[in-house]
Length: 327
Length: 186
Image (cartoon, rainbow over the protein chains, first blue to last red):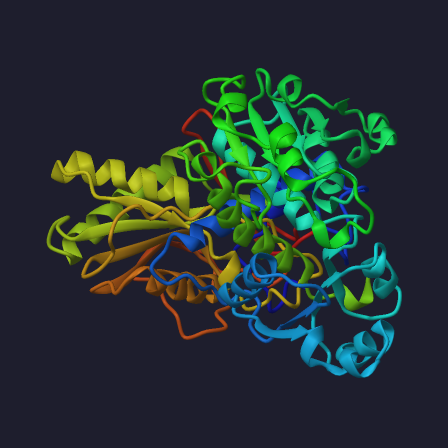
């Protein structure tokens, strides 16, 4: 393959024993620490691009990325769209409300039709857990899971890790508490893999009805007391109460939930002096997070969003390698 | 070419002499160091540009800005490679607008790296001009590109490789011509 290659650059192999062999990014459950570091490393270089006047490089010229979203999303979809465009890919957005899905087409048929238009990558969000996995067995392009039910949201897991690294310089040994609706949260499941694998001391907290007992097996410490979770924490990550996923009542009222599990200045004062606040968005202000804290200097919520573009650029770049279809 | 299939082209002293000459040529052509900025191409050009920066400092007494550029995202063979190459960093912490940019690389071969580097530079600004300095020109160009400053012309066969080896700590250099690369050609 060296003939037409950019011949002067043979040293890459020596520097990097690691080669990216994935075709899909469906979840972080089977990501090794080495792979996670590789993505973070690539994201750092992508962030260089984002600081320039011309925030665009030709790496994915001629590739097509389809955003296939069966659930509402602003942050993730826009983030993927910007990430793709910054790499010069053509990005096509598809949302289920205005598509043939509304006419009764199945997920598989929709995906097969899109696959027939030969995109390089489909980015999919779907309300059913396992939807991305299912799709990856039936299409020839790469799949990136942008959230499947309450299963995983791998790009969020990676960008949260990246945001923590940027804020704290490390992850290992940090007390990171995730508070809120653990039961329905795909963000938690991906974060358990990303933050957990890099050696964070993870705490999960929420009302008993929203913290499944088997979460204790994940290696995280489980508690129902927000004060215990926040005490001496380095990072406090609040989760949104997902009213749309709750068919039964998991707590008596929003007001009671906010009183017991909302983060306000008084509770947050138990954390370390330099602790930071995270939230995957969208925020229910006044429910899980007070206005004051959401806008405070210790909130790195917008840094998370910024990190998201770099992480997604990294994954699009890594997946769009030439012989994808064959491997 | 000896039986071992390996030939030493330049040693540490040889590289140093060549770079001294290149530095003088750069300063002569530009009538001094004014408006010059150096940009090394990752990875091979980076240590070379540092040496040239040091030599300009000792000759002219000025420290010219030096940065480096990773051309991976500008390569024309990204979709041909089996795997995406690992990205390195780009660091040009100064404006290149209206500056004379001297691109520095170790080996000039097909010219495709230089094409990519020029595209990258133009995304950073509008330099007054771009010049190219290379330690070794081994021929086999695939694009209409030539260097302004050449350390050594080394006639090669396509299958041969030219390696520029830099010692990690010590200022040790070695330029070696090999019959064929162990694994990957250059």
